[in-house]
Image 1 (tube, rainbow, N blue to C red):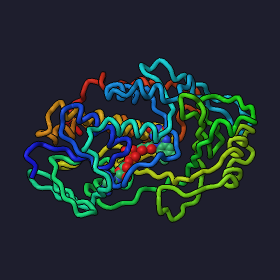
Image 2 (cartoon, rainbow, N blue to C red):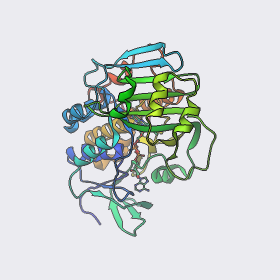
Image 3 (cartoon, rainbow, N blue to C red):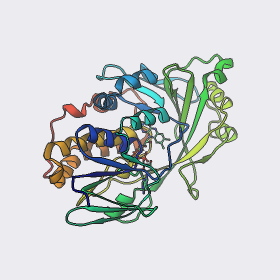
Image 4 (tube, rainbow, N blue to C red):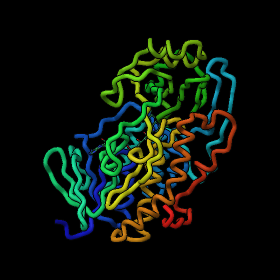
Amino acid sequence: MPSTQKIAIVGAGLGGAAAATLLQQAGFDVDIYEQAPEFSRLGAGIHMGPNIMKIFRRMGIEKQLDLMGSHPDFWFSRDGQTGDYLSRIPLKDYGASYITVHRGDLHALQMSTIKPGTVHFNKRLETLEETDTQVRLTFADGEVTYADIVIGADGINSRIREELLGAEKPLYSGWVAHRALIRGDQLAKYDLKFEDCIKWWTEDRHMMVYYTTGKRDEYYYVTGVPHPEWDFQGAFVDSSREEMFEAFQGYHPTVQALIESTQSVTKWPLRNRNPLPLWSRGRLVLLGDACHPMKPHMAQGAGMAIEDAAMLTRCLQEVGLSDYRTAFELYEANRKERASRVQAVSNANTWLRTQEDPAWVYGYDLYAQPLKSGVAA
Ligand SMILES: Cc1cc2nc3c(=O)[nH]c(=O)nc-3n(C[C@H](O)[C@H](O)[C@H](O)COP(=O)(O)OP(=O)(O)OC[C@H]3O[C@@H](n4cnc5c(N)ncnc54)[C@H](O)[C@@H]3O)c2cc1C
């Protein structure tokens, strides 16, 4: 049995990794358990808005990310068929950069900020037993460990959410996302002149396109396309250029050129859940997709996981680990409204389609917010 107060985080995705770093920097004793044997450089890009870059500033990796990522000045929306501009949203002047970056590069950088020896791979959490004084965690390989509190950062199929609320599959949204990375030289013959961060829209589908590197030598596209449900066995399946041409028939020549240049493309079912009735119970607490998974159309899902990690750290610092129940109430009181609002807008897929002010998302500085009381949570 441990003699010091210990925090266990389950899941080392973008949310869990952020929580590990921030809690360790705040002086907590933290171990993080990840089911995967290792992380590979998944073929995907990601946006990180100024609201998240302010947290990366606190973690000490803002400058590295500024160098690593592309810095679009605007988020453009265009009609997928005519190419007409629908909106031109400035991304500057929110107190930090807005970057687009390779997701694997971002994750690797985050992982490098966690204390050596505290990340445990190949640890698939199977069972949790909570007593008056601690939680006993048992992993698929038979290893057992103990912690004072357990943070469930274990994604949309969270084992810890199941412990709190019972087994329930996520909802299939009716849409898939295709994802592809394209080397810049593959597009050279087209002489395309399009914006650094652009979303092509028609009524029921879209394609978002941006750079994943500061050198601007790699493009990424991610779509949202209606699709019948299938028997999802994993997170994604292979798609094809043919399927993409079919899905984007009649789309602008730039979109056709992107599809022609595609070497390989994957297809991801977009799943979500309704807002959960509780975020914590006893010594267990949720963050990120374990708590509020969403369709990815605001490009803020990981952002909300990282904001959760920062707020949870702040609340534990504020009241101390011994009073974890008050800390969890404070955390939920200071996160639920914002995360649920982002979840709703993201699921609706309306974000920045027309000219609007994104300041409530990008201008937010988590560390500048006065803490709301947790009593009503
Ligand atoms: C197509 C697409 C595009 C997206 N684009 C963006 C974007 O541009 N910007 C943005 O902010 N967000 C984006 N998102 C959303 C973002 O990917 C998620 O919101 C984010 O990854 C959630 O992070 P997380 O750490 O909560 O969960 P995850 O990233 O799912 O991490 C959970 C981790 O827990 C581990 N795990 C699960 N179960 C167990 C267990 N029992 N034991 C141990 N470990 C376990 C998993 O292996 C995984 O490593 C996108 C999502 C999709 C599908």
